[in-house]
Length: 130
Image (cartoon, rainbow, N blue to C red; front, side, top):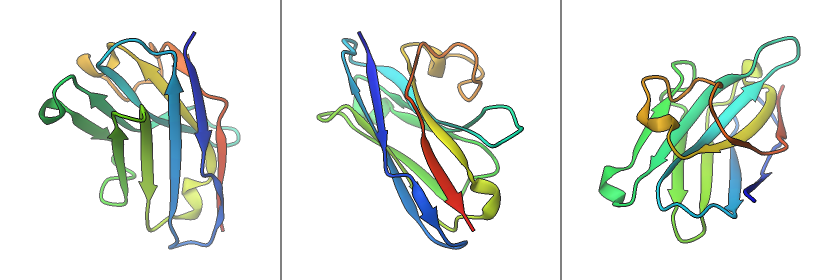
């Protein structure tokens, strides 16, 4: 049974930074697609950043939504099976519930940032930028 536990959300002023963490347990594969999605009130859930955690670290690759490129950075700690999202230069439009997601194969498709197809989801952590 795969569990994803998110942490690190909170309130911050515009221009500030936050780091989100998502720890996975019960995932038995060595590679996968893990990352972050967000949903603002009244809007659809959208992909923010995902990372392909390859068996060989050199094969890992990250994907970002255009709206966060240059401001957010996603990384993965294989030993801890944890993915991090460093969010810098935060804007009020970044305010949303952020969800961690994991799937074995999504990063191998043409649309890794698509919400559809992810097998496992966390409960979410709120990020508020004022």
